[in-house]
Length: 236
Image (cartoon, rainbow, N blue to C red; front, side, top):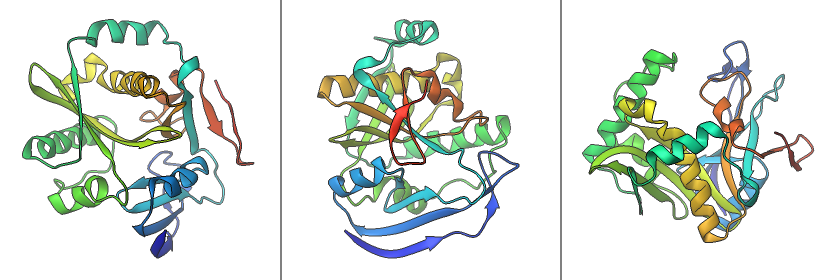
């Protein structure tokens, strides 16, 4: 592993809980194997491209790493309905990451809608270089999951395929497909693919109680969170 830069960010308003301040520890990685990253993931780190990070907040511990034991997962009624509605209708292709105009347009429309509906920070349209740094330029192989309905791109996910499981990096979708529950469909697809590959867990990133954009993760049960003692323990 080669690290070119370690940063502790100054306190800033938390994007998840507006009444809290956030501090983040970031490492900019030159070289890292998937096995090395797996150890980081199990200890509560995440990554966007070559930036590996974890919360380092002084007065809050609400960012909790959450994972789903795939062999024990049981869909609730809503998830079962989602599976019945989308199975056979939405196709999935897993490929190497590559940016297209179609993907970039979907990403910009998704964030514009979330800025309006959930008060996400407004931003200018993403440029190709910034997108590349976040999702395409990685120190180890990453998967690009492409969801389509009748040929139309409706969702894109970036996923780490590790020995300990599949780790969801980021997912965005066509705002017109919100009523289709495509975000839920993506998680169930991760669970089913992890089962097919014989992997034990799906890692969902950070769960934050009280954050609308992240609370859905705890709806996939049973699940486990990483405790302050560094142990994975049952949550809900």
